[in-house]
Image 1 (tube, helix red, strand yellow):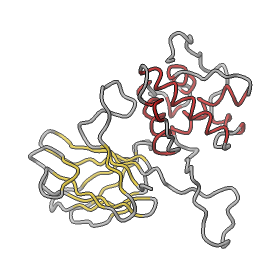
Image 2: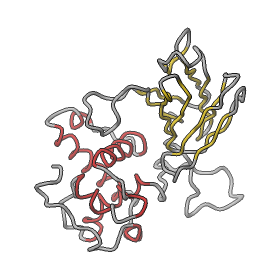
Image 3: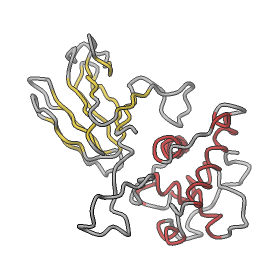
Image 4: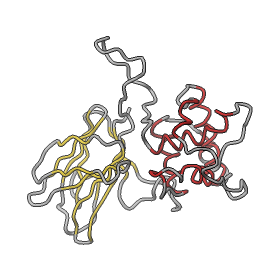
Length: 265
């Protein structure tokens, strides 16, 4: 099982409007990947003449990752994409700096401004409700979800109709999820592309769904609908989203749901 997933620069974003799929590198514990302008063994290519041929290295370790800065003069920045401007810097020559973020963007200074790539750590471990300190080896939850994250809010909003009424088979579309979450301070700038991105991250990285032909057959709306349906089914079946999680959402009536005809299929 991979510890981290690297999204290579210059590719389409998960759930974005661009065509094509992002190019990803999956790294398991102990795996490494060098990044830089290019050369022997460099897997993450940042095509800018201001970046060293071999600028640094990522190493997957446990449920997090480490970053090494092979540069001699500039620091690299790792941004927390789920934080309010939170970031850490890795000084020149620093080796194996641990990165605790689940959603990260690595930023290097470049002649063109900055060069970036994204790193995801979907296997972050969280203390279970039934965990007992000193009770032996810790159980690793097969679905490590962070209830403070935006992707979890998207999942709760997706499951809300069925949580409130199990007989309700309808699921909100992407546009409806955007409108449902926007009253939250952390979601004021939420977009349809961002919601699609979180749905893809949940489906393929967190819950590791095997959609089979559902993920490739039919129109784009059909693929998105299949993912939403499977996500809600798995989340509710295994109790990943429960009634108490509805308290994370804005008060009902705080947002106007879009007309179903305007929302995604």
